[in-house]
Each structure stands twice: as C-alpha cells, then as structure tokens.
Amino acid sequence: MAEEKKRESLFSEFISYFAYTFTPTILAITAMGIFNVTNLFVFNDGLSYTTIVQITVLTLILSVFVLLLFSENFTFKLRFFWRFCLLLLAVFFTTAVFIIVFNWFPINDLSSWLTFLLFSAICFIVVILWVLIKKRLESKKINSLLKNYKARHKRGNISEDNW
Image 1 (cartoon, one colour):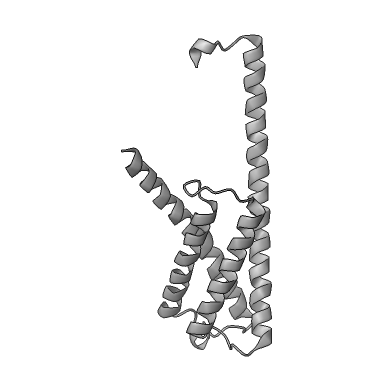
Image 2: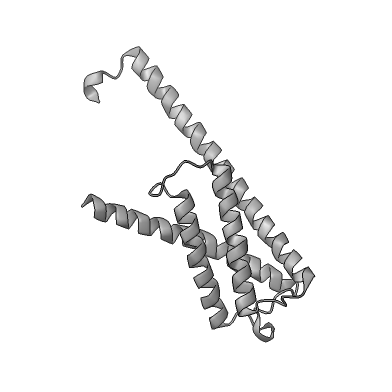
C-alpha cells in the first residue's frame, strides 16, 4: 500500500513538473515567434500539431530531469544551486538537440541562438525568483508555526501525552 501511494505521489509530482515546464515553454516559443526568430510557426498560422508534439516530448524529458534533481523521492546530497545548474545545463543541451534535429530555427543564425539564450535566461530568472519567494514564504510560515508551538508548549497548554 505504501509503495503504491509513493508511486501515485511520484506520478502526480511528475505531472506537476510537466505542467510547470510546458506552459513557460509554449510562452517562450510564442515570444520567439513574435520576434520572427523561429521556424516553428507554419505560415504564421500558429504552431502545427507536430511541433506541439515535439514540444510535449521535450517537456516530458525536461520534467524527468526536474523530477530526478528536485524530487524528495530521489534524494542525494547536492546544494540547490548545483541542482539548478545541472538543470540549466540539461535544459540548454536537450533543447539545443531538439532545435537542431527538428530545425526549429536556422542553425547557422547567431541572432536566433542569442535570442534563444536570452528567452531561456529570462524564463530561468523568473523560475528562480518564484522558487525563492515560495521558499521564503514557506520558511516564514514554518517559523511562525514553530514559534506558536513553543509558546503554547512553554505555557503548558499542550502536554506530552497529547502527542
């Protein structure tokens, strides 16, 4: 039963990572399309179904990286900064492979690559800020709960028998 629950938790965690990755990916690619950097848009009519499938496969791969690096199910001693650096490298290299294989934009065009790096960096900065703010808010909440617990425990409102 516990193993099944762990698998369900892992699956729901993977789906969350997929959703958190897919949405900004589509937004970044759309922004690149606005600046005419990418070949992903078919005749300026939007993304084709094959392109959406390619992006979905890329996002699934990136979600596996996120799951392996940040999930509590796969713990290993590595600071958040280094996990994030590994994720950054994985994202850049995996996305570069997809760009080359599926010809998402001209491979020999330096401005396209620079724009890709710029939009990727912007997305990563937004994610870092979001994670830092989330961690800070969680930390404040936990510290507040701990302070309340200590205050109640000190006054004797909670006995050891109730735990």
